[in-house]
View (cartoon, one colour):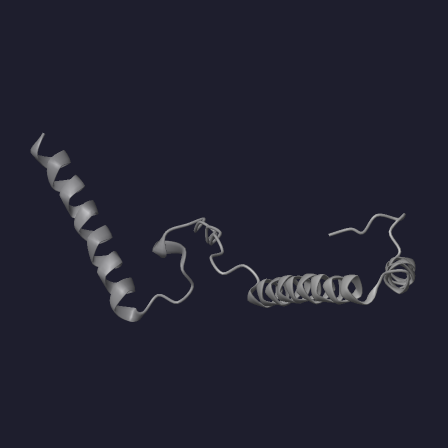
Length: 106
């Protein structure tokens, strides 16, 4: 929170002390009691703000995880094992035989 430029805590404290000195004993006692109550409230507020600042954001909203889409399928993967290569070769061979059989039957 921003403090207004016209506010000066030291001059306010000096004014409070000067006003207190002008009062009688009973009024000084009441002013002291009011001052301590206000100081206690301000201290609690400062401690509460400090606690909130330490917590940060307790329930952050998670951002979506973006993953790069694969440009090509597993056929273009560099690390094909021998079984995958053999399976693909067999499928290609069967396709050519099937196409040749269909062409021969027509």
